[in-house]
Image (cartoon, rainbow, N blue to C red; front, top):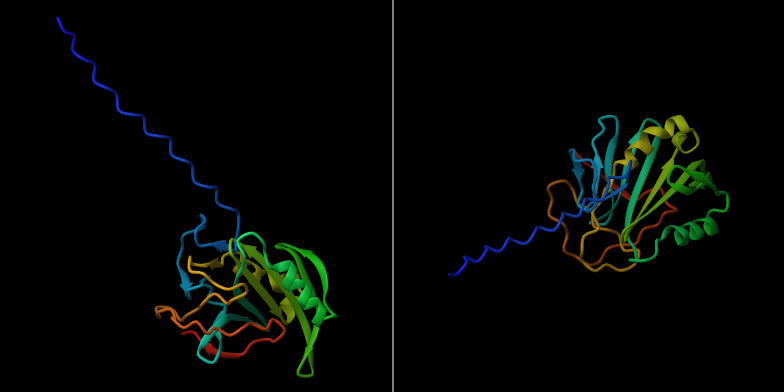
Length: 211
């Protein structure tokens, strides 16, 4: 008498690897868990909506190289750059800034070491605050000018804005310190390879307003 062969049990499905926990705040990388809410999509940057802020693209020629956020008497300038896989750029960029702007000094801030002080441009002296954030294969430089650079209460709306920025690095090869491409909302990303460099010592080049 032949016994009926017991049906083989299907292999147990491997336990799913739990998703990485969400950090308390950004700036976020597009590929990491982050709050899912509507943002202004500029290609390489996704910015939170804030009706109190005037958000503009900063351009050199026909290339969008950064963002300027205006609130009351202050501005926040954002620039996203490609970075190496293993090393961040902030230490290097910070050293370069200090060499050219000797009036700045280091201090500890909510995003780590930052630079603060006063700078003079075109005969006008005003407070400035430089914040650098190293992410996975990207670097985000935030420069605050005006009252918010010296007054913590005035700076808080800008810091809250910065904490909710999403950087979209993409998978394409990019040169070290190459600006991550930006575009107007709903505009196709530029296919050109000639992207101008970024000068963190200037307030901002030609500006086109986002409507």
